[in-house]
Image (cartoon, rainbow, N blue to C red):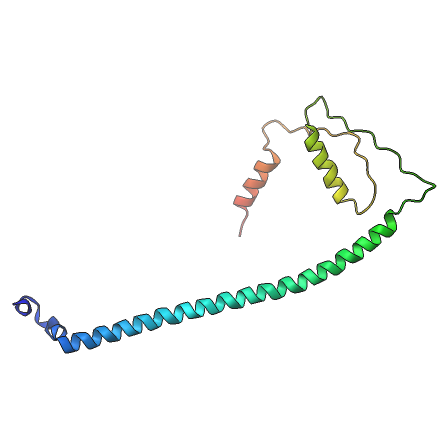
Length: 150
């Protein structure tokens, strides 16, 4: 009854022998294709992970050597002599309380980090005057990042 409802072009596919062998072949091809894709993806993940580890190893060893050299140079430069003591730094005052002390501390830490062992003293911290109608530095950078050409 079911075979009488199907078009004549589909009749050979209804037979159990032909249908089972084609179905089994399609299942084997599909499974083997998926298996090959995942094995190759896992192989690529391993290759990239190993490559990253190799690069990390060589850059870390180079950075350690550079840091040790820089530390040795800094310790040789920064050893103060007993005859010339450093003057005591005056505390930095905020401009009318507009800038909190935490911000001044961060600015001082940034200056100290960039000083390469030299001694600097921050005497005054004030806000830069922004032009009327202009964007803040953060907004301008956001616009620049989102609109720059590829």
